[in-house]
Length: 132
Image (cartoon, rainbow, N blue to C red; front, side, top):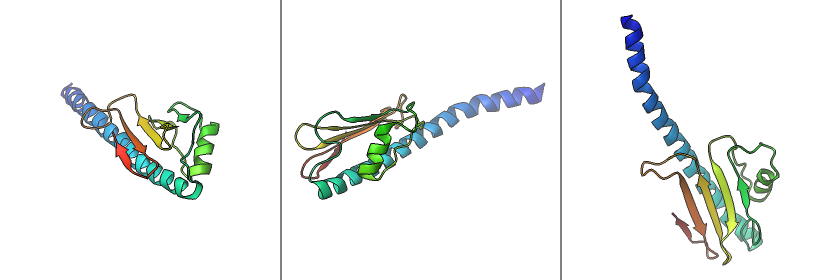
């Protein structure tokens, strides 16, 4: 009986720690992918004199999308980056209206210490990057 009580206390104290580390892992993944996307967008601009996806409808890939969604292949073909699906992250790439690109990576739960659930960036037509 005492052993079961001890295991219960250990499990109750371990679960919040597990959630915290899982959120930190998703946040680290989001930051890494954001850096890769920003660098890939700049390289795409240097080769094509425009950002991907350009004017018009943007690209949206959500965490519950199937791995064979056409937008995932479009991003891979244009930017040479395969967006991970089923990793708790939603991705959006869209034109900012002035020749730049807006990149958004969001989760449905807080992934950073400040409580934010995403990381966003704008790359303007001069290549300046603003994270928000």
